[in-house]
Picture: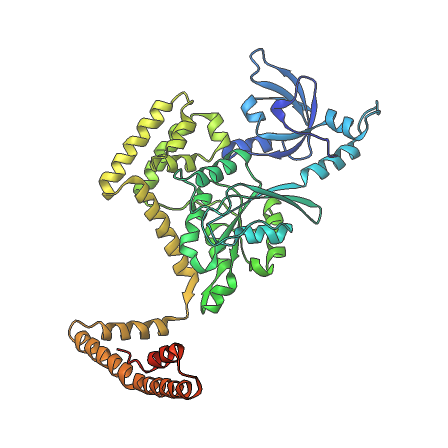
Length: 460
């Protein structure tokens, strides 16, 4: 089985047969294509290509259907010809259905997983523990400069895990951000594990909101969960997961706790068996939502783009003035209309809010995060914090602060000279005794004079 090639349906030539492994894509395309019978395990045969190579006619489940080549490229298959060669190089008969099902079962049980998270969230530690690797771990940003891969077995599944560079977001400001974003968009991992530092939820969840916009399958690894509990804080992570449509699994990566549960949850999400998983739209407010909808309307006129990417995600990136997204859409037939509509909506929002458009979107995301945490997160250290604030208020009072400061300065000097006089007297007596001892025990000479003279010299 190691030599069997994974292809896309668009790679098959006239007369070739393939077995469907996975269907990628978004929205209406994915729904339509699965309803037509393009689901895992089905056998599909290429009938013929059109003179201009598009569309392509296929036979599946006893009827013929035509797909655009760009649509066929979103369907992953295994070639029956390659299966035949790999398993039976001298076999000249036909492959049985049972043999094909076995092949599909082995190849289709590969789950591609991407690990994403903020720097120092414990992502690489989790990767090392889960995979048995020993990658470099350091307390500074950018420790993961390349994607690292590992393969593990769990039940009947093979999990290929890719540890992506640590990043605070997936915008376009750093190479790490673009790398992570490109990997998710182009490689289309089956599940993304978003590793979050439980002690810094608000900052870490910003990346999560961007993953929500991308409309992909996500599982949250709530790492360093013990630190959150030690601080007396409580998080109803089950309810938080329901609000975001993403299951949350608490983990302690440095001790390997929760990793088995995380892997099981990832498999459940891949199999569409977790009831928590649902695609939500973060509500950015009426004005922003109207702008998103208008830009989406223009993007959806390009079927190839709409099949490959979440149009809502692209619309949001355009509102953020994202140059990489503009570059992606440059080949669209209505690119000028998309660009003009984006700029119009940006100007409208900036005029209404009085801020840059990317700041408006960022503020809206943090507003969603604050609301979600307000419902699920509580701090038990309120009394201690209140006590500390009261002391600070008294010590820094605009009137009483000055005499309090003078009092503490006087107390410091009195303590220094009063208490310090005791060891000073002890040292002085000790030096005198040492000088007398040397004077009585050493013969006359320059060395004795030097030591005794130094011992009795007053120190100012």
